[in-house]
Length: 322
Image (cartoon, rainbow, N blue to C red; front, side):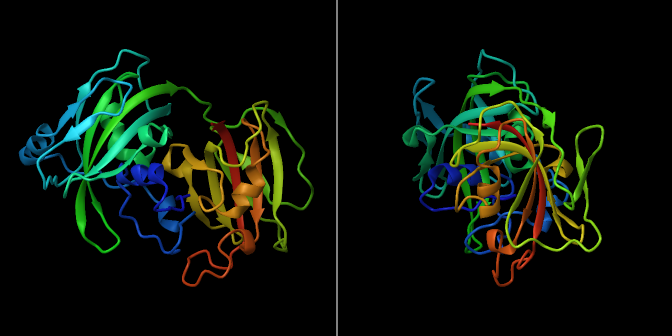
């Protein structure tokens, strides 16, 4: 499920600058959410940095103490041909491993002219992601095995909406890392009769069987399947979740399980589809929820969207919320 983006949301802009999928097409115009392409295999592994790429990143100067926004300077224009990174300072906290929830502060700078593109330090809004998430693939290799407190410099070529390519320079400081569950944990709940049937494999990955003759509901269905004992999710929080989405014909169009890593989303309007906001706010961490979302709370009549007028079925494991 891709996030809807807003030019005013610096934190989301920073996230986009750090992803290998920042150039992905957004066929929904003002925002994307689940897409067929998202359920395919992770992004192709980027080529190794060239000597010129490494030299370009080595020329970047980072000044300032850990814990505060650093001063970043470099000669412009700065360009790299592929994601390139170097550790500025090693941390001394917990070791980072794939599957952990990583919290970081980060600031982004445009390689063309050095202008600041946003700062979580300035916004007082640290970001979190799951190490190994394909959407943050540019961070997986350089951070795995490092420790909390690590400061990392990353340069990444990204494509703008006009088709032009520019290098984004990011400074990243890891402030926390925690282990989270890999699946919903709690008390099983007997669902109402007549709903799509959910079956879990040994890992917790869900599959769904749509009953013969099932009629698409006009209103949102939010059926708790497993009741977790964590705190209630509040609208505006960011959750970490494993999920799969289906059309009513049983076709999978998006799945974090297929990508192998949970994903994080703000549960807020203009960030995810309304069915997620209405269906997940008020649920508890650790829960598994079946959502049947009518088009009015998904993509409605968005002309040209692959999920236009579709009723969507999701199974969501809420693993964490902050």
